Length: 323
Image (cartoon, rainbow, N blue to C red; front, side, top):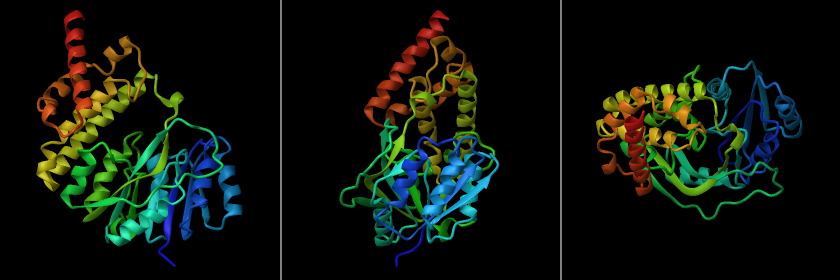
């Protein structure tokens, strides 16, 4: 039998989506699974749904804890895992039927420490009767510094925690930072990847990532907090990479610039024009954008991001002139 794979699923207030997620996990073509559901103090029926699934499938282990946040829930899973490999997916997303099978094949064929995959973005919130299946395995390998370049200077794989399957012996005793209310992945993924000497990147899309329209924030105070944390974490990562891989640290401001551009173009938020001026276009963020974006046109990002960059520059000039 091939190695045991631990799938960690943090659960909080997802009663509408949880069955779909667990249906996709329990119906994987790869059967040697340990499924850890961490109920993070859900107030809805999510905890009950977890227990019902555990009664039906002996591979499922449920841990109920008080509400401590996503990072803590993932850490609880990491501290209780038994598998030779581990992946932590979100409870409102779902895997294609052969996702784990392809990940294990790729990581074992290449003797990699981590397998990283692409994903589909979906708005479909309905249950599914039949799981989609990925086509033939397609991958490439990166090592050491080049792993991080692929993550930060390509928009194909991202800094997400949930699209990576690790060898547990490689990442043991590494955990997420508790207490962060957002962007846990930006803080943690660099540390997890730093101990990985070889990574296999799959061109296959193995997970369906749900975007909940009603979850896009209209709350200016929350957006302000998100931006504050985003800028602080990139300062931390710039310092890290200047020590780890200076060639990345010297260019990481380009990724921060891109993150700010996406914020300004309603990718992460839906704010009114007046709220944008007060929150996203605060003087300190505009100043940081102007300082960090001087070489953005030479960045490796696609042309349409550079068009968005120009649009933002024009918008900021307009605001400065008329306000």
